[in-house]
Image (cartoon, rainbow, N blue to C red; front, side, top):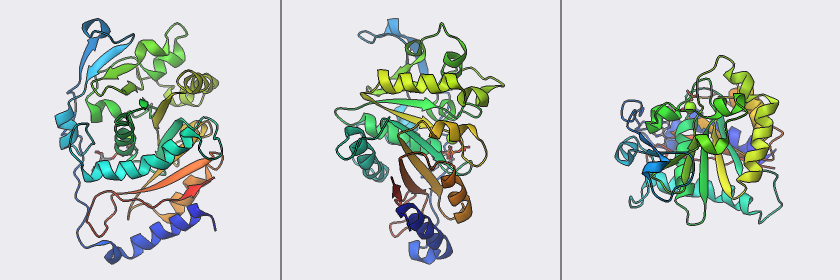
Length: 293
Ligand SMILES: Nc1ncnc2c1ncn2[C@@H]1O[C@H](COP(=O)(O)OP(=O)(O)OP(=O)(O)O)[C@@H](O)[C@H]1O
Ligand SMILES: [Mg+2]
């Protein structure tokens, strides 16, 4: 039995026997109301020393209130949990073990909607940006239902879909620098009825190769659509070096997890994350690792 299969079984065990995991329900509130519209965008001309693209000031207070990691805040539980999650991902990028193709391209996905992909992608990106020697590009690849503008309070602006359609538009023109120094964001861009086809297109494949090559020194985190509801995220997965697979504890069936994992077999590295688990400390975030090569 593979490590992934063992982890899936363990997830199922946790769901059947919640007593093992403490008695208090997970304490989290959706952050939709807590964050939104707070981002203030300026052109680069307003900000000295920053090259091309736009700049957005993220409202760190609102992010913190919504449960996200923010730099400069003394150790929090959520920061510690993402520290544990990012270690193996970063070790793979450094290539200490066997080299992994495009290891710096990391997709965060799940079987179904609402399992915590965007929450995890944002926290992972901020957590990695807080490392001394890492820069991060966070990409909103959930192009049909983008979450980053709502969660981070980003203004509407050109992004991924625009670059995919307009050959004259450079990636660097639409990247959003932020007040988290080493965090840059690529939004989903202008809504388009063919968004999902564009995401699965050859043009997207070429763009990903370009990102992997041009930004090989960066970690690129993709917030993506759920695997069982859409097919475009499978196409995306096939081009990723690593996948963080989020499972909402006590909600998602073992079968759904297995079916979804079956669609991303080609990705060399998968890390399974159990979100909103009840455990002995009654924390809202827990992990069960299935680490497959
Ligand atoms: N561990 C957590 N602690 C606190 N809030 C959480 C946690 N996980 C998820 N949330 C919140 O739950 C809501 C749903 O999570 P999120 O948007 O990340 O899911 P998703 O998988 O991206 O959903 P979709 O498939 O619709 O894009 C969000 O408001 C998010 O902030
Ligand atoms: Mg989302």
